Image 1: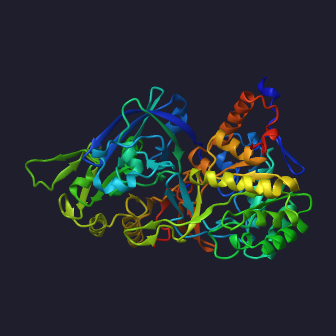
Image 2: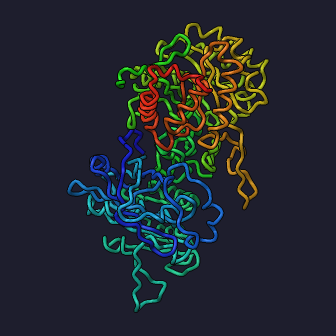
Image 3: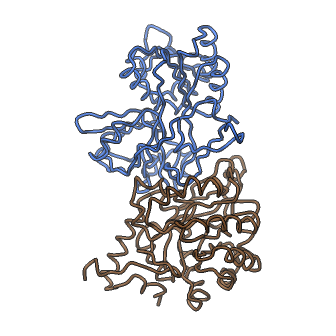
Length: 313
Length: 311
């Protein structure tokens, strides 16, 4: 993506809501301090913030899942990166939505955030999805916890590129792991037939896959995508794929991108200490025309990359 | 006493810094990364990421893992190489007034000398920091910094080519007697010593029974190492630096003004912010303000008076 350095800053935000979505998924709405408005109103889908959770307390013992008893005892020092799930900028007020899953000591602490609490964050960071003007058709591929930036992108595309046709492919382990979405079940149909409101409200046709078949197609999201691409053979010059999810899913999507000659942008995840290009820890192995391979930084050069520039391992 | 009466400047050899705050190599990029967060010109000095003769890709990922109050890194001296550094980064450095020090590394003494020769030609560079303490590369780095004979040799060889540039030698704590290493560097021409680099450490994933880092081991940094670093700084100050009149550039887990002041009392002339910048990229300027307040509170007119004031 573009390598122009973007402006960023350290800001304080106030928690508007920190709502549980199922037992381990949460939606965090943050209202940013006014001086962040200009920077965040021009931020794009696929960019992220680094949140300081080091000052937050643990939940009471009985609210800590057994699997996290050990790791929750660790101190948290480093900030944690989160993609935007939405940015709402209006009337001099910027609200940022973060969707997160409680997986370790940092997100466990975030669970305790209450309305009115102050949060310190750095952003907007990295380069988001680039939207070429000549595309008529967009395919979103979201796997598991990779859904948030694509939910954001869907909204942006619908607002700014009304004439684009968007199809979403959403995969998760089970129906319960689709908790980032507002799920509607049509009672007349089978209980595996569900609708994801975040896409449905924009009239985005959505194909769901789950590993266990508890919702939609039973299998990987990339199998479902491959079937569809095989049937429809979309024109590569008019179509673009945007994907975010586990690395194996992104790698399989990259293969489909080259097989069907459809350009594809992927949003990657790496362990980051800083998020601003200082620590060099979030290396992504990329192709280089002259020297074979080189490492780019997920935080600064990404997190969105063209799928054919990444060396998939 | 008013703010303006406090003299924050310190002397590193022949060089005067406006205050004791510096960046630690490898944690602050090449300066422009931090532009959005603070005015680099407010810093006493800037130490860049390591530069080697040829560019280095660095290690595979994972390159970091968080630990209790700290982190391990094994970046592997990823850098663009000295040629490209001179072409691309010197113009960036020239934008600032701050004295810049370039951290240099290599696999052989000849490589260190070649990088030093090249950088000595750059007017804008105030000095070099000799990295003989990186724990995350297979050749060079720490191998030099743990053997007093090699420290003598490498310091002496580089000193011959740096001319009027300040030569700082960065020490590793991964030795039996850090003072023996410090003495070797001072004897062979080090104008200042910087300490400490990271502690070699390991984190194991108990599910896979493998080290978390691709490099297996990494360097421990952050608040977890601060009390050990303060102790080692005081030891080197008492046993070597004070009598030799060689200033110490010290760091290890500094996040706050009180952390920085501890190091200065222990014997540091200047202090470096490393891991702290990852969490708070503007913390160096906040620390400067905190030091001013401390000086006011203790009626100290010059921060340099604090160096080595441990009772």
